[in-house]
Amino acid sequence: MPNQRPPAALPGTPNRVVLAEGTPVYRVHSSHRSPTAFNTVPAQALYGGGRFDSTPHRPCGFLYLGFSVGAAVSETLLRSLPFGGDGGPRLLPRAAVARRCLSFLRLAAPTEVVSLMSGADLAAVGQDSWLVHAECPEYPQTRDWGHWIRDRAAPWAQGFVWPSKREPADRVSVLFDDRCPAPPLEPTGAAPVDFGTPEGERWLNGVLAPYCTRVAPAAPGASGRA
Image (cartoon, rainbow, N blue to C red):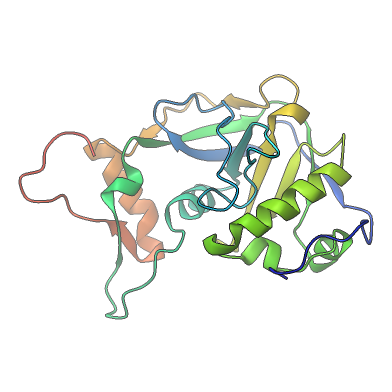
């Protein structure tokens, strides 16, 4: 439904689910950003950005989480990364991992979100699997739908949860800072993995291997952090 605007009213009742306090979650984020900090930079309305980012027209802080390491890594790093057709692994550009890390977190409080997990969940908000399966060129439309759903699930919806497109065995979530009390996340105590270090790159390549992907080799003569 990429060319269909949201209707005037919800066709059903959004499905509320509560993510339990203490649930382990994983976040790939910029190394300079606190692992529990919201992204406060809205996406440009028509270009770039993520599936449910805020925009200058509808600003709010947001953050994305995976419920497994594989979901967090693949959703962040494997978008629009095609297979080459030669049977070899996909090569992830080094720029995609530069100054990024993965943090091990947990929910600091029960968190109430709109479920977009099933066909019935999606139908309740006037959508189908397009909303959670659309690729990057259609993210301006998914953002518009996300704003519309958020407005109609006010004030309770602290975020959304849906099946990961790139790791369908698991879930991903977005949380909104204006609906979440205090920091909704807390570190587990495990050290983050810095992808810009040799050890972090080896760890990341281990996670990427089942997805037939690895970080592209460094250019000859390159040195220092990625």
